Every structure is written in C-alpha cells, then in structure tokens.
Length: 319
Image 1: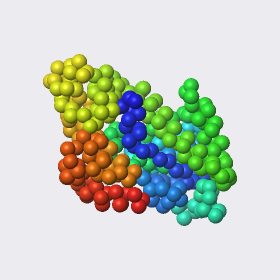
Image 2 (image 1 turned 120 degrees about the vertical axis):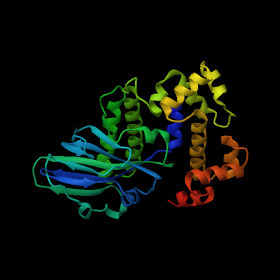
Image 3 (image 1 turned 90 degrees about the horizontal axis):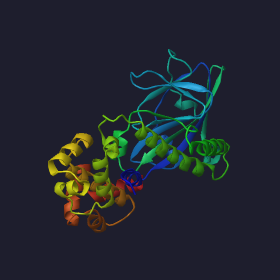
Image 4 (image 1 turned 60 degrees about the vertical axis):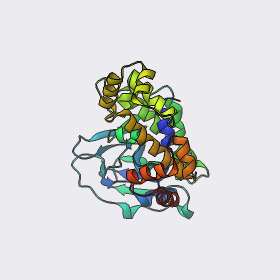
C-alpha cells in the first residue's frame, strides 16, 4: 500500500447521512454538523467533517470571509474542519438557524427531513458527515477548509454519482439498507475528492500531501507507514531514498513541517489510538508499533493526548 492508503486506513473513516432538505428560494441558513446529527446516524466520531450533496437545483456556500462558492446538481462539498457556514439561494439574504424545523424520521429509520423557504426555485440536498476515529490525522489536518467535487466528472465518478443519487432517494424514502449504501458511497466520494485535490496541488506547495507527491519524501512516508515498528533513524531513511542525511532531513522537514523521527512518533500514536478503539491490549499495540514497552507507550500517549490510554479507550469506545 502507498502512504495515502495507509493513512486513509488509519483514519478509520465512517460516514453518516442525517438530513434530506428541500429549500425554495429565497432562503439562507446557518449550518454546522453537531453531535445530535451524529446520533441521528447512530455514531459519534472523534473528528467530524461535514458534507452536502446537491441532488437538484443550485445554491451558494459561504465560509468565513471567502467568496461565496456556487454549487449545482451532482456536486458534493466537503468541509474537513466542520467550520460553521452559510447555505443560501442568493447572496445578501439574512441567515436563519432552522434546526427546530427539522423533522425526525418516522420510527427512527431513514433521514430526517426539512422544508424551508419562500416558495420559489427548489433545491434538494443530502446533508451528512464523515468522521475519523482519531482527531489529529495528518491527512485531515492538511486539507483545505472546503473541497468541492463534481462527482460525475471523472472516469469512475459517473457510476458513483448514479449510485449515490439512487441511495439518497431510497434512504429518504426509508428503504431498508439504503442508508448503509449511502454512507459507504460518501466514504468513496471523500477519497475521490482527496485524490483530485492531490493531483491538482502546485509543485511549490508544502504540507503532508505535497510531501506525498515528492519522490524521495513520498517514498520515506511510505516506508514509515508500512513499517512503523522498524527502528528507523534519519540516516537509514536517507539511505533508503537515495539522499544524504542532511539533504533528506532538510527536504522532509521543509515539506512535512517536522523532522522524520518526530513524524514517526506522531504516526505511531495515531496507530495506537486507532487500535485502542478496536479493543486491542496496550501491550500488543506497543509491540506492533515499535515501542519498547507498555509503560513507554503509556507515557507518550498521555503526553500527546492529555489522558492515559485506558481513559481514552473508554471515552471513545463509549462514543
């Protein structure tokens, strides 16, 4: 597996759709995924990313002071940091909070529903979230605040768009099994959006994804992710990628933002957190990810996450 695949696996990605919304112009709302939305979908990830898929119609999305982003039918917008945002039929409209208008699904099945607006041109949305098991994954941290994807505009995207649209309609209609299909397709859309973003990165960009594109740093990342228990040194990694120690250390730190061995320590703790959620023992985890002892992993985990592994496991397993 390449480094991106390893990190995607460690994300332990999950997805949930919770709302089928019908808006009629003029309309403008404030939006942000919250814990209640996750409970509607039956899960509670450690880190939330919001998404909106436009079934029909068009709208504008606003976040912070950035220009309004137009969205049309067949497009999905992802907000990797779950920032508060506006959704509107046009610019300059007063924004409303309309959570109280959301209707829970009958018998707790299917999607909640929402109808709101002034009776004009209609827009249908599926609103949901993507979640990961660990809050500080390097992939999630390096993504921009907004990713927009025209789903069908790729060799493999057309069938995903058709399947997602069908699953969304069926889930809104409370057909059994449709919600599970919708969630899995949302995970595929996230991966496709990340891949498209990666392909479009400029050559002078810094960050984890830029490092992934660099021949030497990308190879080093793949080694660290594939063999985290190896007793890596900067010298050993430099030899493996064909650079001098100083040239490799400078290149890795410049692109990734931290030295390779510090990055490895962070990655090992990412793996530890993910495996704790799976119910593995601390001793097993310590051995698998390269810590000399359970006590050493306990100290490092407490320092990084602010609580011992046992407490972290209870908190996140309960969620």
